[in-house]
Length: 80
Image (cartoon, rainbow, N blue to C red; front, side):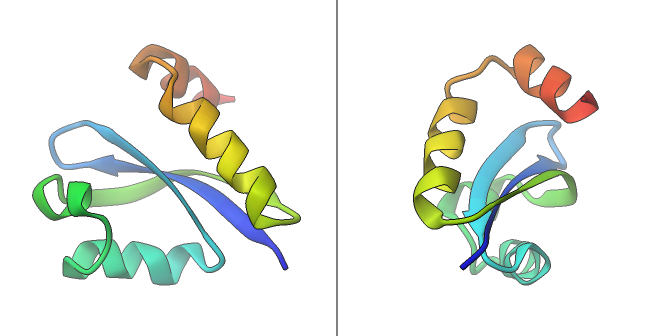
């Protein structure tokens, strides 16, 4: 089953990284306040990056790696 890693830009110009099977549905959960605790206080504006993985394990490994990058490194990843 496919999983997607995604990065959201928030209203206060921070980046949030997560994984989901359906990124659009997960984004709507974040907007409605039913997503992660972080996005309840840092409202998401838009999805700025997605990447597909063949399973949850691979997506989680990449999520872990990205969460340890600096903001500048994350922005470089987003820009491609």
